[in-house]
Each structure stands twice: as structure tokens, then as C-alpha cells.
Length: 327
Image (cartoon, rainbow, N blue to C red; front, side, top):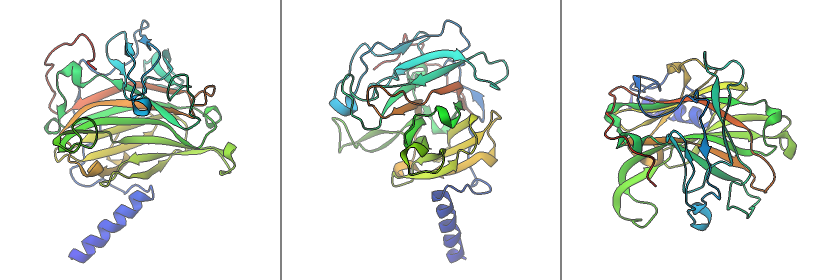
């Protein structure tokens, strides 16, 4: 019996690595959107006065150890520039694309040209970070015992509007923490609070590079217990998609996606992992990545998101109302 169980688990893992979702998620998987929306965080972009102050030049600490202040921040204090990689060049409230959520009139456009060091094109794919302020607005991370999850709607434009480059184009990710040996920073090598960033990347296959007969895309999941990425479902239909991530009480991350705007269900499960081998202790926030070739003149794919929400089965209380994100 033990041998058969091992074989079944091995087959399941190979299916996931091949991007083939199983018929049903394992027992205990938390469907993103379970519970109630956490108040005072996230956004719906319905305020016609919504605005983001980019405060260029952006940060590029990951490339040249340079954090450039003042950092970008939204007028409503709910979004801020990632100091590690910098903010997208264009952050703008736009009219909701066709067939959006009922009643939605506004969504958020994210787009970049200069994704690396300002004024120094690298001609290598780089990325910008756009972060939702969750932890600071709540006063703490959301513990796994509160069953946190996050859901977002994403507009996938027609393939002919994508940046003509094979590779990562966009990502929806979470910032989680655990106690482990710290892997970077001044406390590297010491035992303490380790932050890590699981998520879902949108990978484009461009026919323009001669390697693909037609344009296509798929989700790449980060990551497995060794920190490696693996292939998720293919994007066979553009337009609106619903993406979600959740953390169950055992510290495991769960990834979900479906075309359309309907709420996620167990049928939309992709994978469940102790990402990087960590057992998550809490959800700090979520964020988006926008990627481009960083050649100084080519715009990234125009990504539009709407109505991102953080959920919890046991709602956290608002510990304080901060004046803005702390960096």
C-alpha cells in the first residue's frame, strides 16, 4: 500500500511539473476568496481622483544598491513603490476594459519602459514591483491561523498587443514570512524572520523571435519546495482572468487561476507547495511585477488589474491607521 501511495504522489508531482492540474485539490486546500474581505486594504479603483505619484527616478537596489527617495506612492496610501526594483513607469487609473466586473468603471494600468537602472538600459529583461500596502495598514502581517488569501482580476490583452519578446511579462505574487536561516541582507546566515515571494508569472511565447509558430502564453508557478519554478496552465484565451493565492493553517501556499471573472472554486486549483521549503507563518502583502526588455524605448505589455482583495476567515483587526507605508 505504501508503494502505491508513493507512486501516486510521484505521478501527481509529474503532472504538476508538466502544467497539468489534477482533477481535485488535496484535502485542506483553502480556496482564495474564502471568508470576508479584509477592510482598509486593497482597492477597487472606482475613485475618479485615484492617482499614483511615481516620484522618479525609481529605485534599482537589486542592480546597483541604490534606493532613490522619495518613493512612489498612491494618493490613497494603499500602494507604494518597491524599493528593491522600482515602480512601473506608468501607473494610471483607466476605464475598465469590456466585460469587466459588474458596476466597475475604473481599473489600474501598469506599464514600463525602463525596468532596470534609470538612464542605463541593460537590454536584458528586468522587472518593476508595485506593492499593495497590507502589513503597514493593518499593523502586522496576517497569520496563517487566520487563513489569508488574495484574489485579483487581470486583463490579458490580445496577443498582438504584447511586447514582442519571449519570456516573463507580468507576475502576481505574495510576500510571506517564516522563521529560518536568513538568505540575504545584513543578517544573512543568522536565524530569524525570512521573507520570501511565491507567485505566478505570465510567460509569453512570441512568434516574432522565430522560435514559436504562433503567439502563446502560460503561467509559471514559483515555486516548489526547492525554490524552483514549474509550468502551470496555458493561457488559451485572452481577456479577463481571475488569479488567486491562499495560505492554509499548515503553512502551505495554494495557487489558483481561471479565465473569466467568476469567483474561484476548487476546480481552479493549480498546485499546493511549501514554497522554497518554507512553512509560511504569515502573509505580509501582495504585489505585481511588470517586465520588459529594458532597452530604453520598448514599452512592456499593457497590463490592467481590477478589484484585488485580501480575504481572511478570521479577520484581523486594524491595529492602527498609518499615515502611509514605511520603507
